[in-house]
Length: 375
Image 1 (cartoon, rainbow, N blue to C red):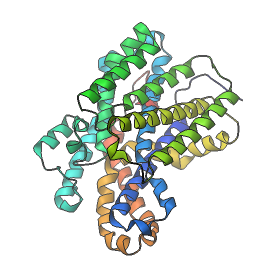
Image 2 (cartoon, rainbow, N blue to C red):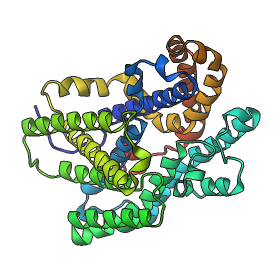
Image 3 (cartoon, helix red, strand yellow):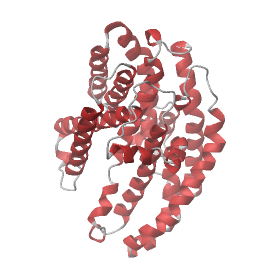
Image 4 (cartoon, one colour):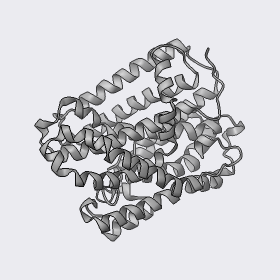
């Protein structure tokens, strides 16, 4: 059975959030193992954990999809409470936990200075983080808490979405939204604000368009969409592995490298859109039925419910836990990896859950007319 009627909540979307957040944690474990252990001691399969950039790209597509879905179902693409109400809800959702995580990251860095990233003690970096503009320069973006660069980028995307993209969409249509988003990205890169993927705005637009597609009668049969999704997933996965192999001459590519990376991210975004549309239409074809059963499973949905807290706090917690395990990682990295998975990883996730209860969950008040998934 297939349905195209948009719902208020899709559990599999929470499952995707949980899975991608979990993968980001594994990616940062991989990063520290690679920096610590001899490369020859790490097996090829271990490097399947290197695609953290792709996980963040998927997060951005999900954000565009979830924020646009309720809007696409309203006459005139109206925002509940207008632009100001939307931005206030986003501030309530994002900022309290973000500032709490920033304070905890700095506190941990003061107590254990070895885990504090470079430039974290510079006042310019601190101001940049407070204002959520640290992604504008690589020097700030690696300070205090590495994953924070994407929080700043998404925060800026909210303003572009509410104040620019939605008005353009209402007045001139979908193609105009794509054109304006491309112009914003080009300007950001020309101003050298492109150190941390400003083209993710285009992935956000992909999520927006997917939500609109879902709110309209289906243009493709479920079978055709399944074939397209399969091809896009295979292409994007193969491209990720090919482009990010160790021999890829990234530092020498300049603007050609950016074009290649943007193309790769847009391909991944298209695959994510196809999967979202299939999941929302309750596809029953194999293998997607098994995929959505997995994504809707209790534990992935649970991880998705506090994925924001995982993303905010896992990096300094991992740095602290893995610092203690450095001797074991140097001596026997592949023996150390199961140990880290059984000790550092669950403790990190548990502390992120406690952080969620203290600093994120209290601000998840329901707003009438706004689905829970986008609160």
